[in-house]
Length: 39
Image 1: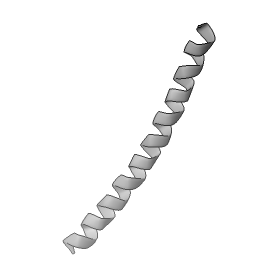
Image 2: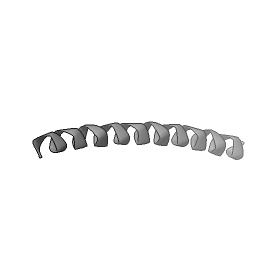
Image 3: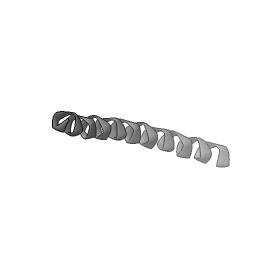
């Protein structure tokens, strides 16, 4: 039980970090698209 508790949060943090990186990339592309459309 102790090992399972320790392993789960590590995996969870990795997934959150990966998702945040993907989201940041999406936000950048969206900003660029908005800028081009505004012009």
